[in-house]
Image (tube, rainbow, N blue to C red):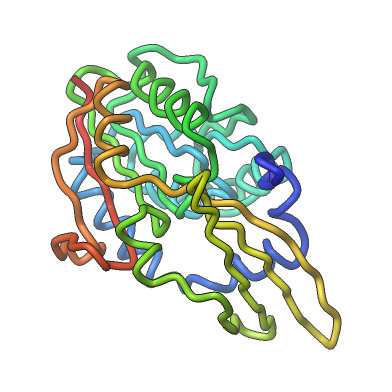
Length: 247
């Protein structure tokens, strides 16, 4: 099991798929949700981690916030800078490990949006939450989303599932490791008759475990939702949004 799978996963056809997977109107709806639930107003300092190619951060910066995006991938940071420049938006983009953020008490709000929660094992996740907690001002809100919380993924896990995004077909083959609580997924991507396989690992935590992790990092969990429409989270929901406040 490669617990650093993400270092080589998000390249080539995978990035092509993600660029096509979410239409602009979905991103705008996510941003409206983040703006409302984080209480964002012009001039606030906002941390986007991991930021990827700036899908959320660029739009939030265009709405008047001071955005800092962090990602471990230099390729993603370079793309975020290029995308921001093309949009005429100013933001700070930094290549860094999300478990080791350099700031203390700098940001008015933060978010981890895009299903990255669960990429890290327990110690890594605790380090990440602790780093975000240190980077936030007292009273600042933090939003995390995931489809990999135990109450989401386990009732809905399929051994095999085909899907399509534009001209890319892909097969997901899932295996849940009961002893270590992670889902190992083998992805086979097919485009123009050519196949490319990758393996991803998502660590699975119960809501109780997540609450304890947030508490240890200095957060109070305020709300749990199952959609950006604000639907209440229930066991069996396929998606969760966690809203917390820094103590």
